[in-house]
Amino acid sequence: MFGYAPDRNCIEREIMKGLLIYNPMAGKFPSQPLVERAARILSSNGWDMDIRVTEGGTDIKKLAKKAARKGLDAVFVAGGDGSVHAAVAGLLGSDTSLAVLPLESCVQKLLNGKVHTMDVGICQDIPFLLWSGIGFDAFLVHRLEPRSRFAKQFPVTQGVANLAWYARTFSAMDLDFWVDGDKFEGQFILALVTNIHLYAGGLAEISPAAKLDDGRMDLWLFFGNSMLETFQHVVDLASGRHLDSEKTLQISCQEIKIKSAADMYLQLDGEPIKPSRSITISIKPQALKVMVPEHLPRPLFTIDSL
Image (cartoon, rainbow, N blue to C red; front, top):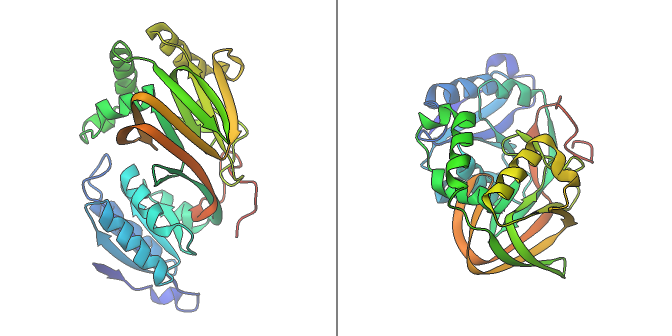
């Protein structure tokens, strides 16, 4: 553990206490130099920081829980989706905010930002922030993860090539859905639950009206059973035509149960999750405080910041 005491210039300001957790093996680049610089930036702006190195998973959850019990103002996470999920699990329902640090440049933006309270999805008792995917996108994630740092340098070109390759071998799913008690069934290429308007790392806008704190999630069902229909859905998503497609269905909801005779591929925020024949997804309203930059490309919340 490293300790960063605030600079003398910050003595007159209120001291904020934070924990910075990082996994040195996660991300595109070696993270230790960026993490230590981020901690120095935070300490020079009134934060009393500790840094913990971790291999992820259960250890991150324990560290986040301990930080919440101690009443720390925020837990900063530098790592992949798995690290973020583990931190969320430890912070749910607490007054300690989550701050995600994918890049050093985000530190200053967060310092000038706001704290919001957002909804958190729960799938198979695992929290997720943005998406839960069942079907083709999860099939891709299970085939591709974990990736090497070198592979992460080319996410778009690699993604297109992999999509074309694996679409040949993916089989559509016969699924039964119970959505807030109403039953649906059919053959689907993808079932996607989203808590935000964007999808696929921001490459597509799937739910234009979605907000992170409205107490609901959007279920998107993509019908079909052929490789051609899979490609058509990808093109429609990229262009926004999925909004009017006769082969998609959008349902705003709070609880979903899905069953299948075969194991369903599952991903949460791009992280592969163990396949299952029975999946339950729900939304936990106003469950997590998050630090976000003040100026966003578009509003993500319906309620003003704290």
